[in-house]
Amino acid sequence: MTHPSLEQLGWNGKFAEAMAPLHGQGLVPARVIAEHRGLYRVAGAAGEMPAEVTGRLVFLAEERLDYPVVGDWVATAVLDRGERAVIHHVLPRMSILARKHAGKTAGGQAIAANIDIIFLVVGLDHNFKLNRVERYLAVASGCGARPIVVLSKSDLVADGEGKAAEVRSRTDNASVIAVSARTGQGLEGLRELLNGGRTGCFIGSSGVGKSSLINRLAGSELLRTSEVREADSKGRHTTSHRELFVLDSGGIVIDTPGMRELGLWDPGEGIERAFADIEELAAGCAFRDCTHRIEPACAVRAAVDAGELGPGRYENYLKLGREQEHLEARTDRFKQQEKKAYDKRLSKAVKDVCKRKNRQG
Image (tube, rainbow, N blue to C red; front, side):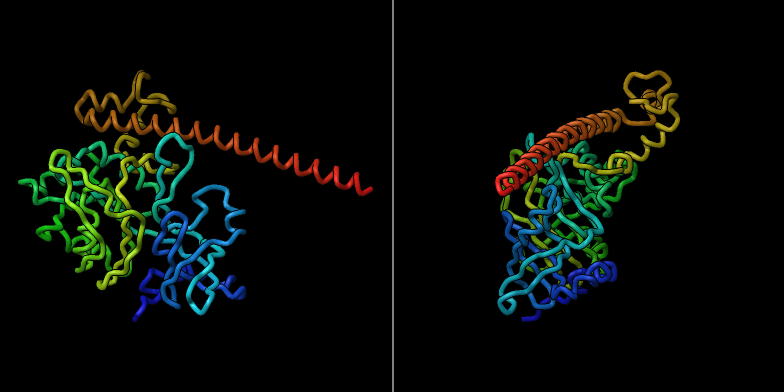
């Protein structure tokens, strides 16, 4: 059986430079191609094998984002003649796509790493909502990869290109492709984006057709698919974990489980980039710290009143901004609580050492 080479898996000079000091420790590079409940599968020059992380890596990890994720390049020790591997280091990432943990938990959850293109898949059925598209763009725009909006199931509407134009007009001319896994429309455009060994990650709600699109790109049934309910276009989570595939055409794709919630998580300049048109308008506000809500001489609200900025886009911008402010406040509190708990444990450890020394003395 022929295994993909490191280059076919996306290896490049930057990763080689980061890996160079670790070769002397007997470690070799591999890419994480699957993750499921803390268990990993990696691929490298020795082929594919299951992998686990070292206790030292677990000890040094300050948060969940420090653990390996699908797409990561890692330094591994290959054991038992290639039957398994141990992950010692995660090489510096070129990009990381993360979201807020679902629910009330404060913290980030990595989705995929070292991706070149994020395909934000939205179905042209009951799943199609412009607010959802803008949220996806805000999450994706700050991660270091190029976001592409993919309008799937274009065969279900009379004018898929018209829907694409509607998205562009609402999202400051974002890159949009209307596709159909059933008819093949738009698939060639996706293949061209993945040329040259680029890594693309598909994200979206369950039932939007991510797995079907990947199967068509691969030319085979790599992933299991299921029908969606006609009433609301919702489907079962046929993808249960994140997984990376190398296509015969040379591209690399990562499939992810359908997500009911894609909350903002430290997007950096994600909101600013996704709403660049509003940020440009904001430069004309009378106050530098204008919230664009109640302040006088607000250039953003003036653009809404003049019909130059759609009210829907304006309201969603404010909503995502409030969400980010709330997340930052919660994260700060969470970090303060973590530091307080750490200081308490450290103080207790120091006292225990002093007590033992006194008893020995």
